[in-house]
Every structure is written in C-alpha cells, then in structure tokens.
Image (cartoon, rainbow, N blue to C red):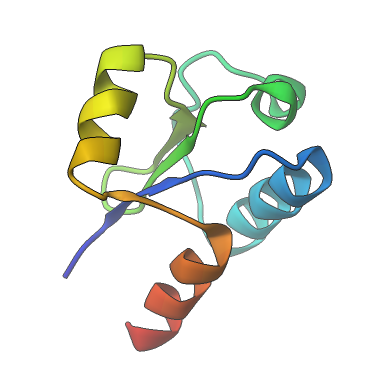
Length: 86
C-alpha cells in the first residue's frame, strides 16, 4: 500500500486546504524546518509520507523532475480518492 504522495497545487487557497487537511487527519512529526506559511506560498509540490510522518515542500528540482517523469505527482483530488480507497 502506497504511503508517500507528492501533491501539486499552484492555487494558494487550495494549498492551504491541503495543509489543513493533513494537519487534521495525520500526525506529522517532521516538516523539514518549513513553516505552514512557507508551504502555502511555495511553488514546489508537497510531499506527504504517512508511514514516516513527514510533510514538506519538495524543494529539489531534480527530485521534482524525476517524480514528474515517473508520473508520481498527483493533484489533491487524486490524493483524496486514493485515501478513500485505503
């Protein structure tokens, strides 16, 4: 079962909704030194690792490129659908 998701959303309001959803539904331990405000205003995709309890903006352009090539970056809507399937 997949436990790590890379979620892309450019709309700041929707990014705030994603972050709110994660804070409400998962107990995250590590944010890699990033604040909620930074994560909202960043243009990088958000990484949610449920198993290891990480949540952060993926700032590595190389990692983003590889994830995009492998079609691993999903929308928040796709993420919610995958969560319902679990």
